[in-house]
Image 1 (spheres, rainbow, N blue to C red):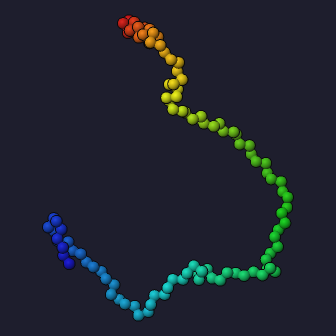
Image 2 (tube, one colour):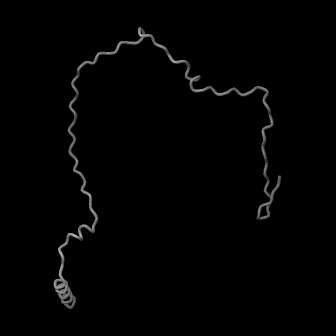
Image 3 (cartoon, rainbow, N blue to C red):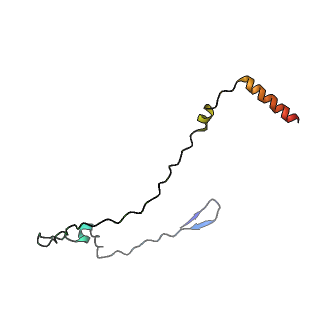
Length: 104
């Protein structure tokens, strides 16, 4: 089958089809329970007795140095609000000092 692209060049497309029909049906896959098999059954006589717990001393754990907790940096605007209030006279004085230093 040949088709044309927008570029004008022919493009060949082949369809591959499996036409062989099997006379024997394919087997169904086994379910999980079928693959695992029947559950093992144990009678009370076959169950091994539980071991008695023997007291043992636990080995001493190595001491771990205490880690300092990191201090979070807060928003900068909070620090700005904590500055003392500056009056207009103090600002004028700072401007005069700045201008004097710039002339030197």
